Amino acid sequence: MILSALKYTRYVGEPREWSIVGSKKNYAYFGNINLLVGKNASGKSRTLNVIREIAELLSGKKDLKHAISPSEIFDMVFTDTKNNRYNYKLSFKNRIVTEEILTLNNKVLLNRNKKILLNAEGENVDFTLADGQIAIALCDADNKPYFENFVTWGESLKNYLFANQAEKKRLVKDYTQVEKGQDPDDPDVLIYTFYRGRKLFGDTFISEIKAGMHELGYDISDIDIEETANGYGLYIEEEGEYVVSQREMSQGMFRALSLLIMLGFARMSDLSFCLLVDDMGEGLDFDASKKMMDQVIRKVNKSNMQFFMTSNDRNVMNQISLRYWSIIDRESTKSIFYDYTNSKETFDDFKYTGLNNFDFLSTDFYKKGFGVIDEENEG
Image (tube, rainbow, N blue to C red; front, top):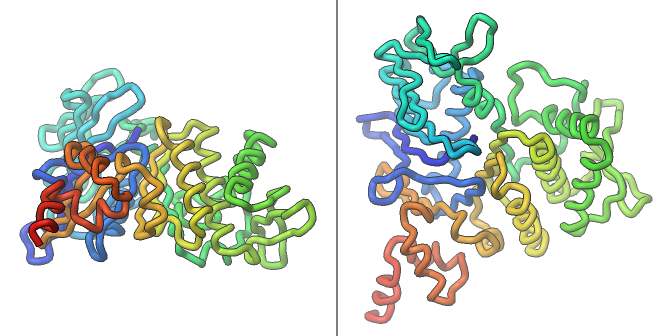
């Protein structure tokens, strides 16, 4: 299941109100691969925070007491591999839910205000909720979520700050398990994922990661977990001779290795997996950045995985097809999304300019189309 469309507002009716909306007041649309680009303060990182928040709410990792804002409105569309369309709306004010509705192909599965909650057999279930509790995360008497696909999607979200140094320096005490409810950004999860992948898929898992690293120009002959006086961490062997521990790796190498571990495990496990990557391409040279994008597209496109990334890197932008772009334009209190679904004609027209992808953003062609060129000629 993937998040296909989104509208969002926080601090509703206040001077600091901010919202996400598509061009022409439509949804912002997403696919398996999504590159979020825009000028500074347009809302790229904020958007990732919104996606992270709804995942934490759906999975039960966060309640409304810890929501970003006391008043928020979510209007989202999710689709699964069978092309089923789920529309989920959640509104709360002063951290009290005012509306919560879930439909499947226009059939109501949940309507909080009308006391509708259908189980797998289509029977309506009696339920009682606190004002700040989310109904979609409710469980039955056997502690199984009524809407397990949403809870699983929320739990699957991983956040990866490509420019963050902290996870490279952190070692773990036990790589064979993670604590329930543990932060998905914690390095324990990465090392545990590597351990699980090797245990489940053996040499095939290791070989796929090594092949990916070779493609990026890293001559890696082995990957493993090592014990040190301070805990456990990853290490790689280069050229069949030199051992490099996690803390000694270059930041670019560690970022690439982490990403390939996560993607490899999700693909082999056929997971419905959502990955957020801020500052994609940071620390990678032009050639490595290009090849990293090629791998992401191959592994993620037409899969159960979904990949959101932000970047101001010209190399990243020029490597990824405009079909995967979401350009964010800030207008007052709104972050307006221009994407291939809600602005198809403008996106298709750009190929006739002969310019590179970066110019699609820098020239404002995404908003004005060929009107931009007409303005330049008049000038």
